[in-house]
Image (tube, rainbow, N blue to C red; front, side, top):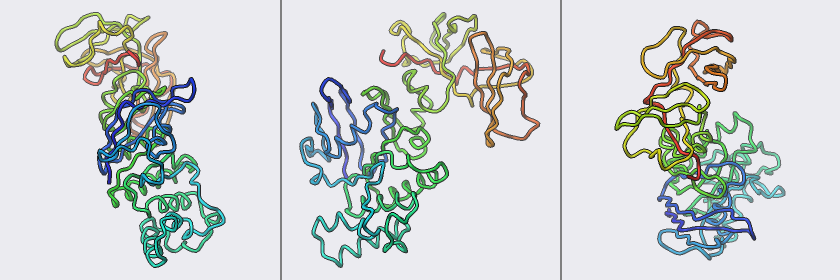
Length: 364
């Protein structure tokens, strides 16, 4: 296993800056995810760690060893690509054994190592089958086995589940996490799928436009986003621009822009200072919003009308118009038809102040 240190990493392609001044530490044995939209710099960063790109500036170290200009074949990393990059004319065994043959291991060691890793990915009975005869999920496991069999210090995965259907993606998330725990290997995972990142990661780095916006555990990222981009990109949220009105040590009162609706928000002294940011937003997750057909006690209660009801099975989403320009999204667990509201119902919405997060505009 290796730790990975990225220090002041910048990568430019001619006049385009793909990654700018990135500083990250990835610990030994950690499952670390790069998360962000297309073109945000996450795959470029992964390829620099793999050695396929060299950074324009900055240093990359594995366990304090400078790897910035070391070629890929000397980094002892295992890579799983988005398209798997398997050899279609070879059998499962031959695909997995390829890296070991390049390292010139003897035949008995190759057979032992290949069959051992195929057993771990539950493909030992398919060892002599052509990879073109396998399903997408089986091909994914072959690609994982080929990366793991060389016993790499670091496992790199570049959106490995994007070509699978939804149910198979769910299964493979569990499979990848099981293998990572079994091998105890430092793993860096690239995805644009928030669910993958939240369910699999020890820590997440959220990227946007070449910059790392926030690093933290899934709980940190979800519950305490540092700006409007992270709040909106990770899961669902109600995000509204606000202006500060009253401030003291425990309570802040904000006014929603273009509205008379005032918001009370609990905060800590360490949170953002209003006078340093020109753009402030209120963020609250849909599952934290309360919904009733009668008025509730406390602050942040407003009357509205249900415009849209979306039934998803496990939960129900309600979109409540509380003002000409404000619609609040609310998510409730499905506890049976007797708990449903209907489109057109008049209801009361409460935004609990302890669940409100005031965040600055990204970049400020």
